[in-house]
Length: 308
Length: 308
Image 1 (cartoon, rainbow over the protein chains, first blue to last red):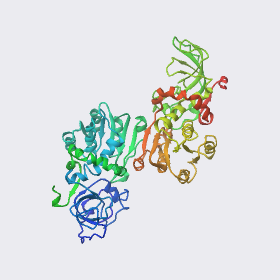
Image 2: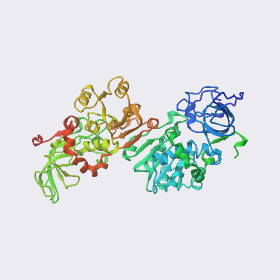
Image 3: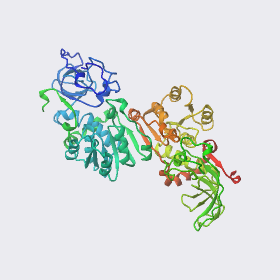
Image 4: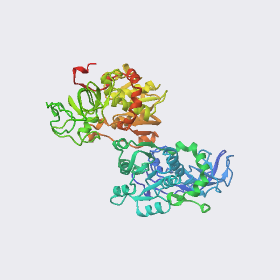
């Protein structure tokens, strides 16, 4: 739980582990033991009350929201049996009750359990919505991706490569960039924290980018516009630059998209929930091809059973 | 000509009329007497060197650029005969030479001469590119238009209405709004200078807008996002708010397009030059249906022959 309301970036002292009695499932509920807990940038804005998934600003004593992967221990819900693996919004805790709302059974034979919170979870669906549904990346195109080591960015690039495009990444250290090119197959990756970033970005994209997947906003988006081709596409998918500090966000100079005749599209992953079956149908194949459930995605391992 | 370099909004003292000898056309040139001269917002940024049509910042003694409609008085160009009416970039002067570059003959039987700088000119092409090509306005949609009395905005709304959509305008006075609804057929028009603008805008769009045509940027764009439907389209077509003062521009908070899953498209009219034949083929019909060559478009009448 939170020990106080948050201001600025959270630190360890803002959180405390609390022991509570195990809740008994009522009729129509089941109790889930969490094995994996997903950490995602939206959780910061949810804590501040700036996100749809939150319940207004959290105060001391509240439990942060999170998507979790767990196993049903006791069930009084006829849709779930003991032993089933499910994914739901269980929050930052080891056990939770589910009424079945936003709860899906997952098949551990199809993909590793952790993948259901990564490649086959919200980050995978987000990346798929960006590269396949909104940008409709084509063979021969060049796709620039911010936060390229992250769970969404790494998958956007890999989906683009799978579709015959070339991926170029942006990340925050040379070590991250080495993984992005070495493990994920991006053609290049540029460290935005190193001097001369814009020149190196231009050198990595001599012909410009057809698509830019933006997770960051701010100055990085302005820089990306300078390498975007005329008539290029920008997917607006996140504003990392301001999750911790809303004042820090630099907004977009509109002359940039006008000059580039850009098409910009805002992406909210929940719009694509109804496409999850289509997305997950290609899932096993997708999960086999994609790398980085562990590198890209921040998961908290909660139980020994999780080591599957 | 300019009497000095411009800083801030230009005023009358910045300009002076200069008499010069009539230039003689060389081989391959013709001399055009201008009848109409078009005044457009881009000319301000061109004077400051911030526009493609300009030649860098203008200094004292320079002549501002402008599109003009005139009659060929003497021709040594085999494409044009004396008496032909032509549209070209002749600048702020009564006579100019043309080599035929960016010069088109116009048919005064098809539409009034002044219409070739308005409904059938750059403003018309811009409005058509916005409503037809980029936004692809459909019957039953609602289209919100800023600067709705202006040459582009008034035509965007009328094209939308022609396609079976409903147009709602934004303008800077009640008098302007009365023309926008009374003459141009917009369903409503909201005066942004009057108190309670946002509430009145919301009242005028109880179901929201499918499309917003933006000529302004800044706070008006942010306000428009608050009435844009989810998955709505925004055409970014101009930044009037900063033609006179680049520092004044408020840029766009990216949370707005993300929240609305908006599709934003930058429009530069010169991209649609190759579509002019398609656009003008529907021209006579278009010109007859559209109102506001005189209300919407700022033209300088230069000759008595212009009164056709």
